[in-house]
Image (tube, rainbow, N blue to C red):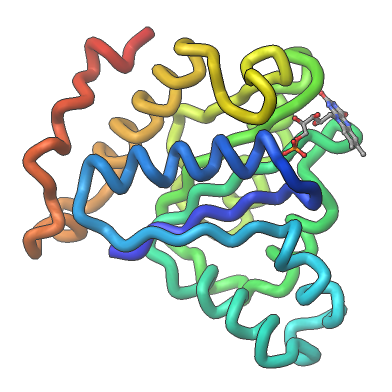
Length: 196
Ligand SMILES: Cc1cc2nc3c(=O)[nH]c(=O)nc-3n(C[C@H](O)[C@H](O)[C@H](O)COP(=O)(O)O)c2cc1C
């Protein structure tokens, strides 16, 4: 099973990229899966060379192919102007509208104010509704105060990540983890720990 993280920040260092990497790593600890992360700080200049999918060059096509062929996406964005970034929207404008049907998606965001956490529900989740993807109910939102420099330092957000991973595995079809993917540590993250 292929887990792909996508960070929608166009800047480096990035709190969002860190959160996406933390979620992808947590999934990787819970199951034997392949993991990778696309960072739009690198990918956006490549993708903006194309305004439509039929204009993608080889490097751009490879990025979109990776998104379309992933089994699970972990998508994070900084809040920009009360929404996800334009760069992230551009990436998803280039993804085939059938490619994400039924796929599981974990959503994350970082922002300057807790007041914009609902961006995840009102802007981000509907984007994946369009694609017919299945978004994990637990989302991860962190504000600047949850970080020390660019590293997450609030245990409440870390617990939220664990809970999102438990939710993800609850949503995966049993067959997805049947062929030796399931790791014995899968259930180490208990609902009790994650419920906080
Ligand atoms: C252009 C721009 C617009 C922003 N708009 C918002 C906003 O509407 N709401 C908010 O809470 N934070 C806003 N922020 C703050 C960022 O969301 C916040 O600093 C975020 O953690 C940055 O993530 P990054 O380190 O991954 O780039 C904005 C930042 C920038 C640069």
